[in-house]
Image (tube, rainbow, N blue to C red; front, top):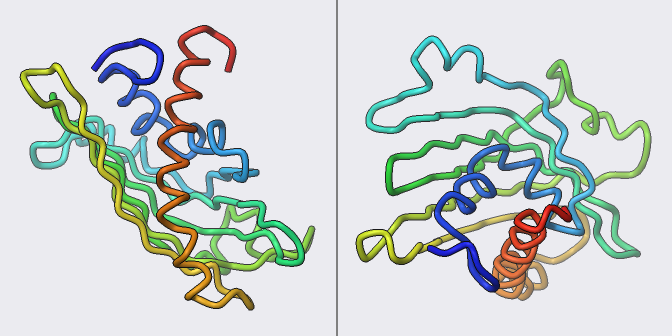
Length: 182
């Protein structure tokens, strides 16, 4: 929990991971080409004070996440329902795959502009303050199916490395934000 090289403060974790999650993920992940907002419920949640149960600053949206995949495979679009929330010492980001065919506001579902393969992605990210605020614990669980011709056994081989890589990308992006260079 410090705004210094190689780590991030609690506020930086909250602003980078929870607030505007999909846009920030696109900014710090080179393979993410777009985070297209299909639907947002922020205005509807304002009526609840953006509070649900013990959680505050609740956000909910449907987003098309477009990922570049190296040739000969096609790029992927992962439509997800993104739910974010926080407590004083905890934050949560949940992404659930959704079907967006025929949904108003989609950009990539029709595949009319380029060849895209629909994929499925699910994740839960949780961060919490530990040791009376001295440390931040960031946990992530993911499951995905890139679909197409890539066998599942090959997809599973890359997942652990991708999660570890995400940590470095986020910390690097946070350092650039801190210096005003991102």
